[in-house]
Length: 514
Image 1: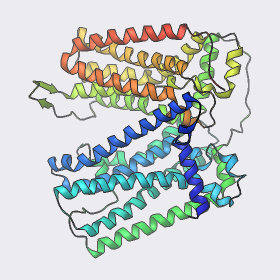
Image 2 (image 1 turned 180 degrees about the horizontal axis):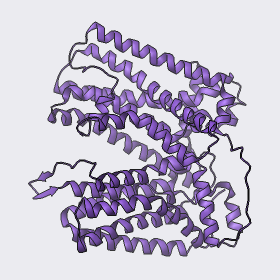
Image 3 (image 1 turned 45 degrees about the vertical axis):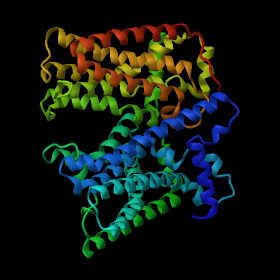
Image 4 (image 1 turned 180 degrees about the vertical axis):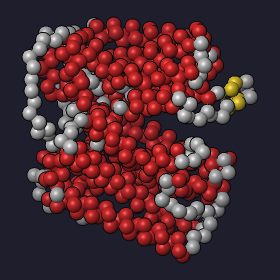
């Protein structure tokens, strides 16, 4: 990698992580950049904390020799899914595509700079996490230090595997759907994700359920690193590294040579002749249809908000049909508490309902075309209802099976059943209205990359923090107070819904810089 490419990647990373905005004279921009960096830092500290404590956890489970196979596999799956959630379009094209191709650099550098930038981030992350784990692991059981060379090889190889496999799977799905002349963002997002995680799902279903078993079974580290590695195993690891490196280089070569065809595939439009019927809809129905069209036309929007509704449906259906295992009760003798399997699953239901919401960025998604909405005789209240309704409808199938699970799997009856169901409903409505109110307070219409709105917008960050607080409070209060605690939470969420609704109704005009 020459000096020119290194400098280009450095500048892009400064912009991506918003370091460059810290020197901006606009205080709101500087504050947003600072909050984004704090969010990244908190997430990074949590990851390092988990990594350092992992050897202790697995030593308690008598799986200390599986620490490295587990972590290597876990990093691959997390980074690969992260890449899919970011969207292949953002990796191959990027928000600065037009600017890159007018720079005085070689064409292949402009085509691959996004991939190399992602690789640098993943490489640094893998290196810090894996070597922190080795230090903690060495304290529990010293191992031959030469095995750190294998760790170094996997630090290089894991990002190559994560980036390469996610790009290949995504492009193959796009190519297959284009052959069928079928273009649906939701189907594409779900199909891509399911194909990518299929080996992981199969690994979990093929044996007794254990939280780490599926990840360990799909690990591409064949041995433990706590003992000396034989020459034959060294040879296998080196051969795997050469194959992975060769496939990645080949993928980059194909991208450079077939770049125009790949870009066309990513942005292909349906060739079917559209037929229009003149119809008169109510204002709310017209706005709702517009929201549906915008949502399903954005791969980034769909793939970053559809996982929670799908997870809620799968878990609820699995519990209702008796397909999911029961967790072993956890006794907390000091507090005289027992964390039961129904309690854990119910908290998971609440987490799925509140962890992601389309409303936290729905106003911002109007983008630079917001002036159209501003000039129409449409109230912010009507627009809010349409945007909130989209988020609620996404969760309806999962909410129905979750309610069925409360009856059949949790065996709730009478008042307990009613309160739990009402709490699930209020949780969904609360985060939906809260997201709308926060996005109205902190809109961002001046953006060129959808990922910035979906993941890095001020309103998205604040709503995510609020949702985590709601989930934590729900778990703690319901654990200590049971049904009474859930009843109190229902009251709190109803108050929050009312306050957010009043805030929305008082807003008469969409304000924000375009």
